Length: 304
Image (tube, rainbow, N blue to C red):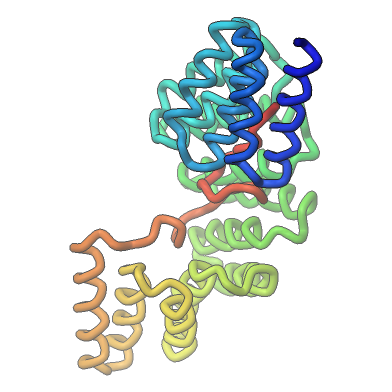
């Protein structure tokens, strides 16, 4: 019997590694049917549900895993990720706290809890968690980036830039870190430096609309409205549902005295804003997503 359980369990792991989540779920179901007390099978089936976007089902499985194994730090961490995705930050914070209590050296759990604190506006707690994540793993660029985001929100631009410098040193291939540092320079009105960073961000990720938008804003601040319009054009081409891009282009047209074009863009911006159709993935602020996920500032490495 135990061999059969392991066969199905490992089969599920293999299917999930291949991205075949429905088959993985079926394999985990077989393992659970044969051994209803195997916490790891519930955890990993929860991972597949989470991969499919079925977060409530994932949470149910993580709950069962923690019921069967109250010291199973990984299941608390994964359930925290699901709550985080659903915007249930207080529950996520509790789960990351449980994971940390069980495994005090878990840098990712500190980082993710820091992200939840940041989402709640508890910036000092967020910084404390990023500090701890960095202490535990000083070679992870994301932790410096995420702390830099909080410093920028607090208007501590020099500290923010220092953290982005470190993130870039560790990951010079990550366009998002240049983008974020550009935002910090823009906050200091160092527009030429901001433009240089947006240039690097665009070279590394030419399909990121917000980099064009923000570079356009810096061109506007320098009075280079034609160049700004070119950037807003590109941002709109890449993400036509973002009201702010039309609004910014309208401002540039207005500055050039092209009032009809400005009015047309303002009308479009108003329409998009009233319909709430702005795509959340098209950022104007800083970002801290890791390679595998989209959400602002969040590690979402699901564990098995």
